[in-house]
Length: 384
Ligand SMILES: [Zn+2]
Image (cartoon, rainbow, N blue to C red):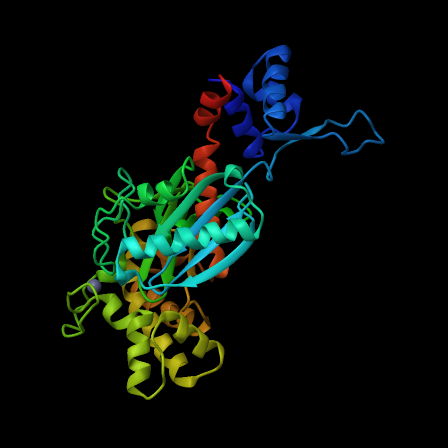
């Protein structure tokens, strides 16, 4: 196996080998070569030697750790009505978070300009020099082509199809690599990494102003041929042929069960609400109409989720997004368990996300660090 400094760092980062002894065993390198690799990582500041651990018993193996504060990551999760902007360390812990209001239907240029201005202001406010930022993660509520990193016919984002969003961000923050993703995929990565152990198969269901899923198989996101994997919001339901969706079609799941759809039903009852977030707030405050309509939305989404569960056979479905709540989960359970054979749900856990609103920014930060500190990237920078 290749055993440059990047490969040694990969073992340390993954927690697979965190002492020199374990690294010798795993890499098969000579003691002298391994020592050189570790010294390279130490002097580059990528690894810290926990020399103090057990200092009184000097023979205890010294632990090597990935240096979480070596650099920072900027992560921006764009949603339909706002963007969440986070500055994180290299283990994806947010050190500063803020939100700005926006409207993705304004198009990419003004949206991205508002984002880069807010990021610049956040860096200034936290006294973070641009030179200490190692990467920028950007997610959008629509499919992202895995090859080009550009939006791929996002149903709710007019004007964004094929837009070079990474180039535009990179022009505003020169020299910083940009990683782009679909928001449900990013949230799935964040939630999966926050679990105590790797899941063989996981599905994140995001229910907010739109509906989508992110799929993780063997610890890695599965994005499909053109980034559309898991985009279940626009599956047509048989019983709702007239419901007009924001994508222009009729009868989509999102047209009847998204936060936008539930908000519209609440307005018909005289309750002001515009977005999935408004619906989530009403549910949290015990509004009975919002509770009932959210549960009904859960039942409809469960009908489509039943097929997802039968195809993927996941260990866990994590429910995130602004509408994630007890009534939503109750509704999902009702149809999901009714429409699937017992075998398909025998080992399935259906649960709320652990990261709340931070899921996508945390997932983006992991994705950026995985890319910038991959074995190949580190070997290229430090010399294999
Ligand atoms: Zn649609």
